[in-house]
Image (cartoon, each protein chain N blue to C red):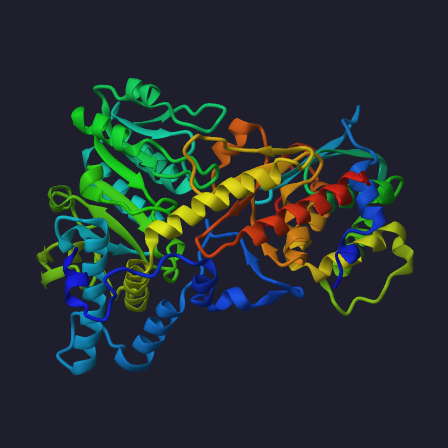
Length: 151
Length: 425
């Protein structure tokens, strides 16, 4: 397997120039994820109106895989409902961990993460933001969202 | 000349002068390939590789001599016991301990530090007493002291480091007060490579009646340690960082200290007699070795010491120093690379960060080129916080590494920098 399978241009681009990066005014939920062994830390800010994710931004620092994954995730879930975002989480999870998962055309740019599963030590980097998102969305009381780690 | 050398007729009077190519042939794993490239193993600070002599000793023990120790009268049990206790003799001689009873086998450095924390410190510490450590310690030399401080009401005091990653002995001595009961520090920092002035620090502590523990995990592969010359009460290290298997380590303890300490764990081997009313404990060092020990690990450790005794160790250490100088020169031209830890006395490792490239990504890129390094916080999160970085990349060398491997490291780092920085210049 080649390094370019992991570090595709989309990943490198989103690492260099993360989208939706920074604080979010009027956030209705904030969730923290960290992988202390790698030194990856991120905070996810969500503004949810009714059932829909109106806006989402993230802050923190991490490796190229974790930063790009978070950046791509924010693009993908903005405007989606809770259930749609959680369904996307499941599909990305399969993409990262299930060798038998068929290419999923509807994942769009997120398909760039498919190379990660060839690098088992890095799956936790790509999945950190997604687990953080799922925890935030599944938590009914925004103030009590637990910190997430995928290590 | 020590007794072992005098008794071993096969050993040449003078080992052959150090030759890295010859040395590499003693380490089978070094000839393997990773992702199509020759392995460049630069993660010796995490764990070193085993020479043929260690692999064969472990194999021979498993094939022909294994039984439980200190129990049977049958031949295998006697052979296993002789090998296990023979390893203790080798460690005692290697460290220049006053007696073999001062050598306690543990799982590793971590267990040795915990043993001292729970058996020496816990019964003695009172509310308001102080345990002094430094800012550059590995978590294994922080957390056991935090735990015992919580248990006793004692206070953990931390001596500072400076921007080079050095420990100023005067600053440590200023913190050795009337309430300081124990001083624990690394001999060599795993995250920075700093060699601490342990001789002076131990002497200062002893002059003030303070017990001393030195974490030698990173020092023991790079230097000969003489615990009596050093004068510390306790010295801890792991076998797997000095070419022996994992799961075996050593606590050296001054006999007068160990005598006064209660057993830490209870079980078989650490007792003389047991009834439901009363148990009498075994003598040193067995009262600290409850249960069946890691016999094969000790055999491997003994073989590693024999191996180190058989080579030109002075030449090997000189080669390590040359590797460090070469690494500093090879990494210097890489744009945006910052060394973390620039102590004037350093063991042969380089810890660094590169602007815009996370250490974890460096680790993956280098692995694809067959180069193994460590990335992360190195179990020294306070050090990472001090330097304001979440993690570093660390290349740590052993005497079997080569200049060419370091040149490959530099080329690979430059490649990673360009990949992530988008810089084609």
